[in-house]
Image 1 (tube, rainbow, N blue to C red):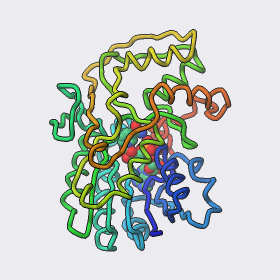
Image 2 (image 1 turned 30 degrees about the vertical axis):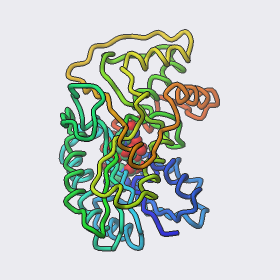
Image 3 (image 1 turned 90 degrees about the vertical axis):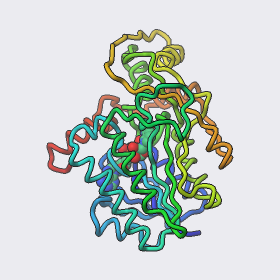
Image 4 (image 1 turned 60 degrees about the vertical axis):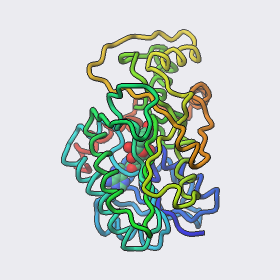
Length: 332
Ligand SMILES: NC(=O)c1ccc[n+]([C@@H]2O[C@H](COP(=O)([O-])OP(=O)(O)OC[C@H]3O[C@@H](n4cnc5c(N)ncnc54)[C@H](O)[C@@H]3O)[C@@H](O)[C@H]2O)c1
């Protein structure tokens, strides 16, 4: 099989994706600068179908080397949440936007045939209605989301008949990964319910669509296998209609799974709220997310019980805190 490049392949979603690709018999190259260590991929170092380039996407040499000989690029690397982007607009532009444009340029000239971009449902931002589709207006409320939109534009500008592109607007991801994140709503509340018996509910009425980490990874593989005309220049919301919940509903589901958990309410100003429709990806690609939020919370509880997520306050689990640590060390 051809070689696939997964940028950010050591990350929370990326490490699960790398495993799924290797299990499916692909040869996988990961381009990742290991901001959060290599816990997600160290199990693959001895696998002859796995290769790591420890480098930055915005570095021309690293980007050029990474795309060489690959048939497809699955692009997940970058600053992955609002708070990390808020540290520096300049770094957000350089990494998330210029880095993406560089990869597109080199991928295209190296003869890569498909480029799947990991976008985000957060670009709908302050959504006015429920059941938003891919053609609903975008209303980003964060720098992170604004640059995701610019990256989608750059992606579609780069499209050609030999360069198939598509964007996956993923819901908020949850569940266990060997590179764990605890700054995502369901993961964070689960860790707090387990360790503190208390969760903080920021707001409550805002909608969030939710997606298990294995289903997020599987969406990339679905696009890799799809007929190229089915995905070319398309955007897909990734998630499932049944897994849109308000933050208040999520807090209650977690309190139900972890008995004796107190819910503390805090107000939030100008929070994003988006409830999405996922019919297009099901209709066009036959994609179906398999793991429900309820099942994901049970999985997290099991991981916490088995000490698979130790020292839950360690900054490695929280992207923005980790980036601030790296900034102090001069590594970001
Ligand atoms: N987790 C979610 O809920 C979610 C939802 C929608 C979209 N996304 C997007 O999916 C992608 C992956 O998210 P994640 O949750 O796995 O985040 P993550 O932070 O765990 O993974 C990102 C990976 O990219 C690497 N990286 C960051 N900057 C880099 C650079 N300049 N060069 C090379 N590597 C770099 C990091 O080391 C990390 O391994 C991100 O683009 C994120 O914005 C995530």
